Length: 262
Image (cartoon, rainbow, N blue to C red):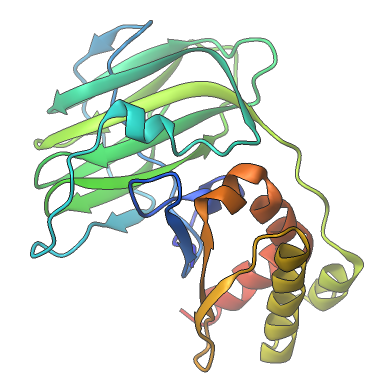
């Protein structure tokens, strides 16, 4: 499940963990903010140093072989219900610290979507406007994560990556589809500020029904432990159904339950 400790959880939940459009999305804990790499279609690259990270993503075991990610793969992490605005930015094969100037937020955009992938072994810190948002530790080629980042102020805004290995970064200004508010049932479960296991499992059941009704049944790997392990197809995410069902029926409950059961 998600694996994130920042206040910007909604788009980060959409992290994909495989290379194809049909890849499954697996939740485990509050998710990681996307990391970055940049070949500037517009914008300028400069050297940069970044400090401590707010979230951590671990890559696959060294014994597994993966295709090296490309900016095209990273751009495919954008959900189908998210509108991209303006020209994208990216680094096709970065090595060492870099900072990308992505300019001011254009009209119509509400956030900056950023995707990161590892080409070689290394640990990478990524930041937006100088604020570190994630750390990625990779044992080799790995399509790490993608998600939206909130930015404030008039800009120009920057994305930075620090690390000595090779990496790939892709970013674009974006406007994700508006998500529905929490349902009455989810709001009632959160009313006392705590979540018990029955409320957690009832919330997941509502989320599961919502996904089934939308035509995207959820795959459940196991459910006896404190955290339910499940997955969704890339098509479910691209359609917007996954984000809408999660926000309406399960997000607040899931976050609260995972925080008390890590």
